[in-house]
Amino acid sequence: INLSKGASIDIQKFVKIKNSKECKEFREWLRTINDRTTDEEILSYINSFKGKLANFYNSTSSKTIRFLANTAVGLLSAPASIGLGALDTFLLEKILPENGIVSFVNNKIPSIFRDID
Image (cartoon, rainbow, N blue to C red):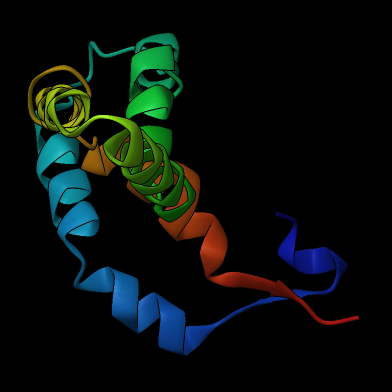
């Protein structure tokens, strides 16, 4: 986002995300970066497929889709619904936990900017 071309910062959103869990994780991660860490390594981490997939899987729209799918399966078979719920929990906790750093950079920071057209 180019602030010189008619964009501004939403201060209320900025203050809100400044205290978020994702921002805290981002600040902690920044402390681990040293002068030998290359820009490519940083970009590779932030733009990783797994990180983006995890953030999508943990998004509100994905949660809605998973809820509807589990409900539909539950109407057909309660045991299958229980299995699907267990698989969903396993994926959320073990395979695709939300990456606060990726979420902060890709979702939170861009959300504070708004166009002033």
